[in-house]
Image (cartoon, rainbow, N blue to C red; front, side, top):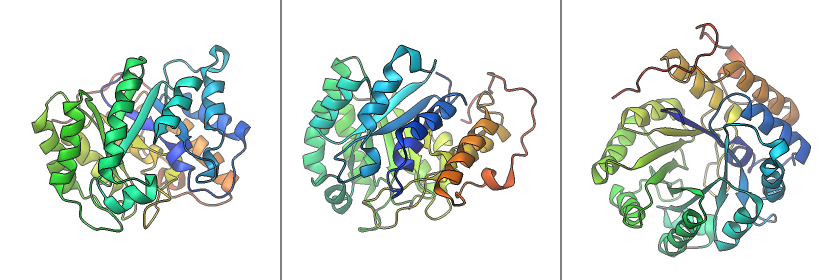
Length: 314
């Protein structure tokens, strides 16, 4: 994998709040388009009850489709979100490459999202993560509402660090910090990620930001400076957690890639192809999506895409 991993979460986090059902064939076309851009990981869906999140009702079918050799794009990891043991069982049965699972640092958000307290969720997530690892799968655990909660406001950093320490103690090194409510600011991001790196320099940090208050890209750059080596984003800037107070879109993947390419990073990703997928998503939902590059176009001009990238900022 490249130095800085781009994890496209549009098919899951981007679509989960949409009321208009997306046909299976349309999702497949979007995922194929995303895979062709050169992003590293694509999150196909979440293993949740279809009555709670109807848009995710075809998650098993999507993984089964893309697990078939004839349909599998080269070089792409397919991730899926699981909340409980049943979801893990379903994911193992249909070919998930990478399991994402997590615990909210907010008591209120945790109960709205999973029906469990953070402590109850943690007691289930850690054994699930170990089971997935034992099955030879990639695993990423997360702390949701890590930078604040729409219901509770600021989240004490000690609460976030305690969850991270529990993950590390269980031998789980791939950890994502999710700004579920969009409350993060760059200084906070650098401080919190730095504190986690101090706990264990070998931790593999991912950052996931929502653009609720317009700081998404600034927070992404702060996360890179603080040691994150994977960023999650959604094509077109779609998305938002349906169980938070103010659901708002993710950082737009094409905006993130444009920002990185202006600094010389990830020039191997086909930005125009990302824009075309976003345009098709916008046409399907018949509305203007929040991504900026979708509207303004790119000012990046470095010639043909190249796999070479300079070193990340210290």
